[in-house]
Image (cartoon, rainbow, N blue to C red; front, side):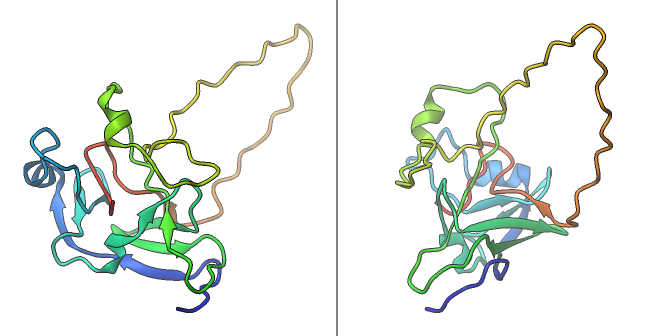
Length: 170
């Protein structure tokens, strides 16, 4: 209804905080007729189930070209604006589900993306890490050592889910 400026904290993703094991019990991927959950992993052992005591944040959809991002701070999840969002524009963030274990062919169908963005990667899964290519060392050339600085932000940025079994609002 109104313009949201870049960097604005829009909403907290709320719901019942449960263990990873409880999430697996409640939502068994193998037996669900339709894969639809509102789970958001906050750490290795805990998940927010937005279907129980959740708010409107659970209805924010995925896009490969989002205008929002999910930010985890002290086991709480917030949705922040990545850029200025105009009135009437849908709120979207990149779910980037973590790939857990060996990829299976069924993942392409189960985690297909139809966001329509020009940058759409065809899946709501986090992009696979490409192996780093090592540059060949030239015999006598010396390489300048660069000291890496720690990240400037105190915020830990992450996205929905810690495994392909974890779903955010879909």
